[in-house]
Length: 258
Image 1 (cartoon, one colour):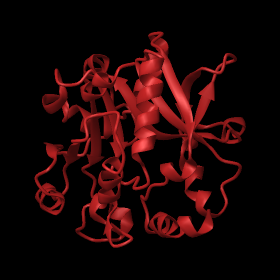
Image 2 (cartoon, one colour; image 1 turned 120 degrees about the vertical axis):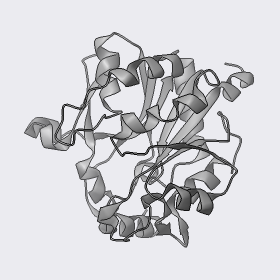
Image 3 (cartoon, one colour; image 1 turned 90 degrees about the vertical axis):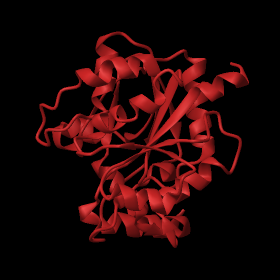
């Protein structure tokens, strides 16, 4: 693995959501403040705090009050517009015009996971390239769902085969009692081979209750097609995000409870 490969790794950060459950009326979700700065600003600063195994200039997918987000973050970034919020798979697709042909691999991050660091991205990219994988992901393992880990209860469970290879993830609402006992979880931090990603995204279907195109469905696609999937287990704190006011409070408190 050579250093010049890293310039061919792009980062897409999803930040189009409104965040209605955050109870910050009219504020785009990624601009909800955490420790006196927008959640997404923590990620952006973290990515520049150390040498990065990717292009340090991410593509940010914006949607709800896109102009407000752009004004808050400035013109140092490239922006892709998701005019309708039709799911995470649809969101990544909006970055295609800015990324296709420029990158061989795409890292996807969520703008409401403020504790993602350069080291996390580096480990993900290194794992992905070393395995020559089509799709790679970070997972987390927790002993329980108490205290600051409470929000993880709603995360999808990671299902591995007898050889320890990830074959799928299962959403909480669809999991059996036995699957709910699994403590390895999917925080949706991914790296994809770019050509495969752009080929598969348009094929995603929205046959689900939300009528959305889910990025997570690509794991099942990769498994069915026999594509190599790589993974590593990361620090659970990195995976913390905020969809509700209670989860935001956990983000505020977590550093004191480690």
